[in-house]
Length: 480
Image (tube, rainbow, N blue to C red; front, top):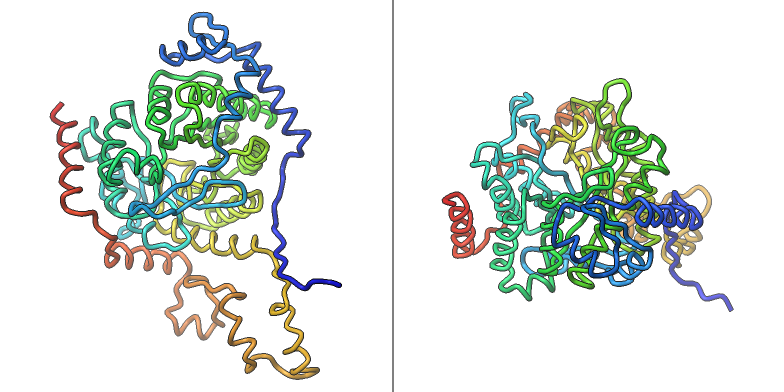
């Protein structure tokens, strides 16, 4: 007897086969054992030496068994909370989340349309926008706070994100003291160090220096997160033909060796501490020398790195929703949609850089609104087609019969909201209806949406006493 039950087909896309992942893994082990990586942090060298790596000055050669032990110890899932202590994201195989990027030098002003240097207020505006957009799951700063003291700039960015959204966020930091202060702030918000460890709402972005180097600053930040047992991602960004081989496979091997060696040191510091895999390998455009965010090679390599994260059963961090275009134009829409769809189909965990323009140098709030729409469409597609007694609709097909219509049927009324995709900003009018609605193009509608949120959306505030403690920590930094 056939049991009629719900079947949802997933649309998982694997760029690398299991055998190809194995080839990348084995080649990466050979790099680590025979070539090695440069390590510029004394504590990390001591950890490696004590565990069995061969150390020659700053060069560390790491045997395969150490890598295997680190992979076995690293958690396959990393739960992330929101600012209020609720579970917000489960970073594990099969779940995808979307977020913005960080630290752009310039932005497109939402009122004048001019490109200008970023300020702390831009971080505030971007975070308010993220807080209000349903499809954006996590925040990054989107801007450099260039109008505050340099010594505390990253703290100001952290504070701006923390106070303008309850959603989790990924943060950047200049050095270990930044991270110490940010963790102290986060423990105050969470209520205790233990509460923060159980439900962290922030993730540190750290990175090696390609090819095959780990700086003192990057490792100190990474080891501190391991010690405090709060999440960190260790993310290389290798340029094909510049800081890595011009071939995709070669650069992915270099990137993988950097990530795995970072993971070894991280797990030696604190076994089982939360670690997020990932990275990118965009090309250096040989005509212009820019690091291309929108090139198909970049998106393909991101998808391949996602395949490696699934091979290791680790959550990953990847790049989509961005463009090399210098304006919010057709190229921006093309590159953002293509990258978000491909990485959605491959099952990337944390898909970031939504809203980046100009090869990662400029932010666009209108582009964030557009990528919010794209994320909604991608999520609708990757759900696949549900086959169940309700969706097969045999009873209503039988009732309506040949030549009838389904518009007035209860089945349509009861199911259309769940099974049809609705957009707030995309044009679904005929010409006359579009003209009656103002005749605006998508860029104009997106700008109007951004200004509406910036001017009227009020994020949930932190308790006043918590805000005072945060400002005390920032003041303490600036005095020192």
